[in-house]
Length: 255
Length: 287
Image (cartoon, chains in turn yellow, orange):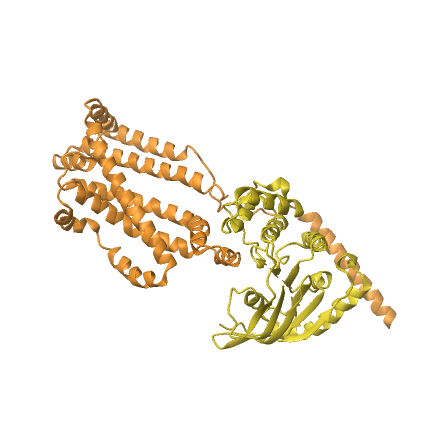
């Protein structure tokens, strides 16, 4: 299932945050969205997943999601959004309980996603017992459990320290290699973008518009930290974003 | 020229280094500690010790005549009166009706209060309609309405239940909708993003999320319930702690008055301990 964004525009109380965004999200690819803070990246993601309605334009699904997909458009949040009163297992079963699955199916799915995210030993742990990286692994496991057609990832690694981020990036690449999921990956970290994105969409500062789309053809599993091609892409992205970021930084926060 | 400036700079550097070395030698001392404090620490027996010291001081004061018998009864006499009450079997006769009134009234008030509080938290229409009403009812001393309750619910148990329920209701409502408002919205968005049903979101995310706030609200509500229990029993109850206290007060029997008051304190401590146990069970996920 592809997603197509058609002339998306959005404003809050007369303040335009996004303007005229048209974009294709092809199946099996990771599209990264980068931009200075406050450019409406996260808003765009909420619009794509239907958590908010755009003021103008529309988000279209092309084709229907695979039959086994329980929740076609699934988010991974920056702050993990785990229920603190449920165990790892309980947090995953939460999203399966409303979908008329029987207990053994739920158990099979949980076993599978926990194994894929290397969490099998932490089934009954509570979120407060886990490190940030582990919490985000649980959130990713939860997202995988519903077999999403498109994963909508809102700065999933931004709350983590750089070592954990590096480890989780490897995990994400591993997961993608295993099963080529579609994702929209919002981040302000250009390194994450060049490591994970098949194409990188650069938004301008508010009102967010697409400034450029950069494609990276190097396969995900061949992207190493320090790769010269990636470095030059990242440099290019930074050149483009620098002025925007500087100007955005000096803006007053209104509203 | 350049050479001389360089030498001068070098000399200055050397002097500075010497100065620091001298300073370090004179005043080498550990950095003063200024952190710590402002963290409640568990000191288990202090509370009990304060209590016992106060009792002993009173006992000594009354025995020595420093405190006259009219001012305060002797703690040992109060204890003796309590033992007497217990042995005569009257203790249960007073305590059981009181406890049952407390349970029925508080259960009624708290249940309805939690229900209404959740409705206010969830529906803007209910909020707009009921929050001003609750704000208007809250400051009314419910005891003032007792005559009205007697007319509405009869002089028997009905009016007592109603008074306690009504008094527990308002603080519970306020605490509950505050707690619902404070539930992390990102968790609710998460629920929506996984297409959970509205009912599931309320039951599995909003309710557990509001539970800490609801329980701490109950602490206040239940203390108010005990206060109102006594008020209700002071008006037309044959048995009950309130009736016992009223009778003792009318006769200026300070020993019995203090026995009654002590029983109420113990009741309050028991309720609070029960809530602590419930919190421990329901809020295991915290801390």
